[in-house]
Image (cartoon, rainbow, N blue to C red; front, side, top):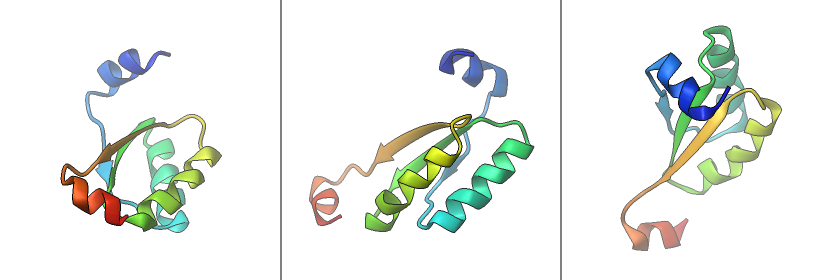
Length: 77
């Protein structure tokens, strides 16, 4: 199923700031059980970036990454 069809079907996109592999695994398990194959993650600090590779264990989940809008803060990450 395409991402557009998936968004239309689910009508929601959960949003989170996940800062560890454990958090990623827990939320991905919950999303899988709830049949919600989408999540948007906010890049707030370096821990989030370090946790992103954990999503590879869940190829059935579409991952959207959003960044913070303050460029100087992004450089500090």
